[in-house]
Image (tube, rainbow, N blue to C red; front, side, top):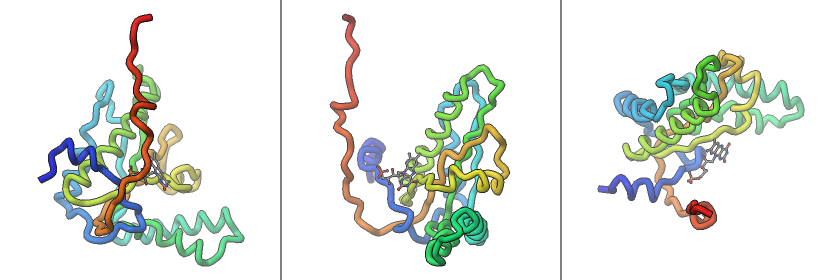
Length: 190
Ligand SMILES: Cc1cc2nc3c(=O)[nH]c(=O)nc-3n(C[C@H](O)[C@H](O)[C@H](O)COP(=O)(O)O)c2cc1C
């Protein structure tokens, strides 16, 4: 059994295109969401929301994405539009994490937005802990105003990411990462 620290040290994403069924069952998905929900949260505001896409909803949302994409890219090829139509079918489950800050709260919005990043990471860690794989993506549709309307987002809400979750059997090789020594310094009194 992999220890928690080894799991963190070997964590990797699996490209959405390489994800496949099965995804987590209902009880496992609930666990993944509970783990994701358990992030540090200054002010106990809970400034995030989950929107889950599974089953037919993935294809239905893909139709909407394709429609928006086609309207904004009238010269796009049929192949590209078909890709948009099938985008959410790349994984059995896609979870949109919506940053939903309380803009009137004394806790800065920046801190509240950081919570949603932690939520996405917890989603990935819990996914891996249950033996599944995932990828955190934003792609074009996280920043598209028509998609925001489609998801009924309020002005202050932003999409922190779409976390794709499924299974995978491809070998995950290490990728280039910044050297830790370039990222770490130790403060010392002058
Ligand atoms: C906020 C955020 C958005 C991302 N969006 C994309 C994206 O749109 N397309 C992409 O190829 N990777 C995106 N990534 C990167 C992948 O999630 C992932 O980190 C990468 O594919 C592999 O790195 P890993 O194995 O260390 O997780 C994003 C990452 C973050 C944190």
